[in-house]
Length: 135
Image (cartoon, rainbow, N blue to C red):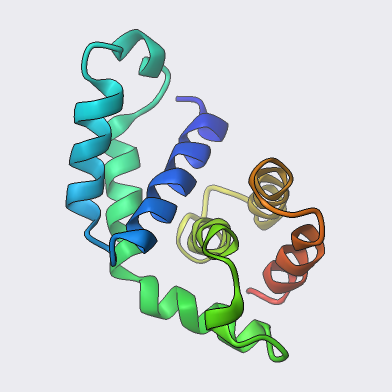
């Protein structure tokens, strides 16, 4: 399984779930129907069962993850944080808190890579600052 690709797909699906008010089952079903069906070779190094489970768990814990972000970003109201950055933070915080086989430094580094690719330049420092406070 390619963890980086899986993490990036998780981020994209979490972002879509945020937009769709955390209807994660529908988001995942649409992803499989529209992106995976007929293109299985493109996703051969992705564990879809793991991806679905991770998305489901992040969606179920969204209020808890939101709380960690709010606690760690005293000067920012949660509502002001871009949905892209929230999705990046949800994935990273979930990994830090619940996936013991992934070192915190790896989750932070991967979040910063997603930030470079999908968010604004200034978001990198914000994301790093929040994740650094998570234990």
